[in-house]
Amino acid sequence: MKLLVGLGNPGPEYADTRHNVGVRVLEHFARAHGIAFGDARFASRFGVGSLRPATPGGATLAVALLAPQTYMNRSGSAVAEAVATLPIEDVASDLLVVFDDVDLPFGRLRLRASGGAGGHRGLDHVLACLDRRDVPRLRFGVGRPPEREDTKDHVLAPFSGDESARLPAVIARASDAAAVALREGVIAAMNHFNRGPEAPADDLPETGENG
Image (cartoon, rainbow, N blue to C red; front, side, top):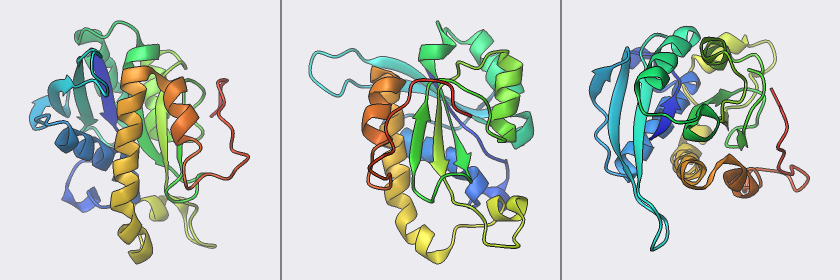
């Protein structure tokens, strides 16, 4: 079984904030693949379904979706419980965590197979609870805050008008990236989505650790 995790905060007051974009990617993925995503399990919103092959003859994959409802900086407890309970064979190949990243320009996607948390408290707690760094992740760029704006205020605010207009297409692309990563592995997804339309020409795929 594959496990796709979208990090964010619970409650309607956070639903449209930059910090919740990982959950929005998860919601899009659920709709795109016909997966019911409304159960309460592992202190999370949870659902199980199938990821059909992209080409004829490929294997259909069982996939679970998990959106922790424990607030961002306590996300790891829910993820660790799900990993311990579900038939996840190998975290390094069967798990993908999606979350916001202020160090990437808005709309940039960056997949990595391992590394540190890069200052993201949600991922940091996931890595600590799993006690490993080889956790595949998909970072969704939300951009740096304007000068003199606090980073916390920036990520807990809604997207700007221009960003909101572009957001559905980027969320759809992130959902596609997650599907490729789950089907074919993170390295295959990196080779396509890390070089997408928002990436500069010299942003080559990497396989080593990167926070």
